[in-house]
Image (cartoon, rainbow, N blue to C red; front, side, top):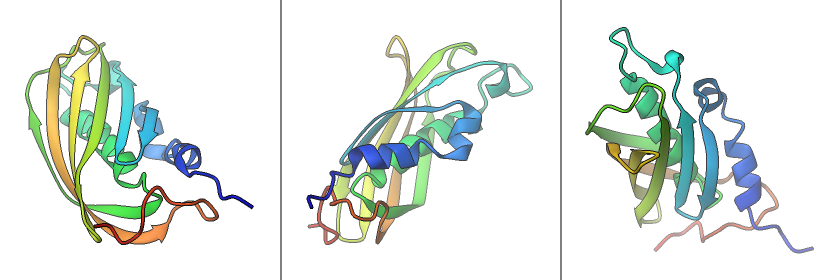
Length: 150
């Protein structure tokens, strides 16, 4: 029996995230070391000043980060994340977040994330580091890479 490549199973698993669902975030793409998400903003994403809440943007970044960092079919937990807010998005805009793996070692991974509006305008950027726990997320599926990263 050939084990399935885990990407589709992982995408299905990541799509069950209750917090992302509550915010309305959609997972568009997952590949080894990469993820792309989308969020249509509405009044529930605003703060008391009428601007998009920083927690909404952080949640969008974090979800893309989580999908990208767990995309090798080995569990990884965030140990640090910093965010730089660049510009305010339109309160009713469409946002896209992308996370890309910059570096991976046996136990650590470094990721860069960005959020952009539909027209490409940069809203915020982030760097995050994960600790690789190493437990398979999808049993019976082959991994996208070795548990012992180089």
